[in-house]
Image: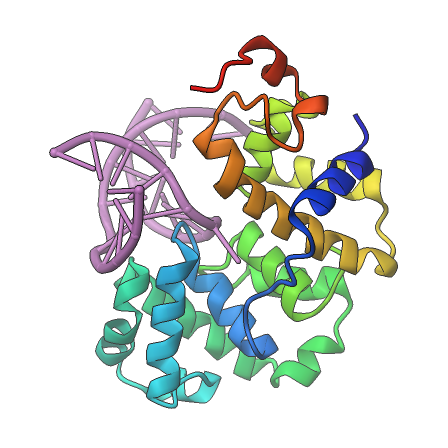
Length: 221
DNA sequence: AACCAGGAGACAT
DNA sequence: ATGTCTCATGGT
């Protein structure tokens, strides 16, 4: 099954998702760290706290007392860890000279830089690359593994880099694919939340025509 | 009331 | 290299 075909089906069914939900690139980066293994609605509360305290800013985050930062992050869970991670990230961000300097880096160098911040792993780095810096990077998350494993496109347990290379090679790595990668990942998340979880063997979802497991267990529960 | 959510790091094997 | 544990709130 072609990845383009799956994309078309998702887009036709759900429509454009216009991600990332965030106003500025920096806010996108903050959200990427805070949403680690966490529901987005909770992240929004934490970001609202930061904004209410004029702390949606790298310098403010670095300068504020860690206890206080953690208290703002509380609704997004793991607040002690995330306070450190966000702080690490902001220190790196400032040390690199800010957004303009980072935006001038080629994607591989920028990615390596992000990955060497403690608290920024492959998925968070790729969220930032794609949604804040508009680089043609395909984000792999647990939903992507689950959905495409169910479709029989991949096995599911492959290493992160293996899957990323798989999707990028088959879709193309050109800069013109930024929009495609952006929308594709957003649609995957949307689909995973809506259809794939409620009906693990859904015969009615928009991918049923290309989904082997839909034929096997055709009942609705 | 268990279970999970747009992961990552530390640590043991 | 590959598993397992921990971090923590908020919504089903």
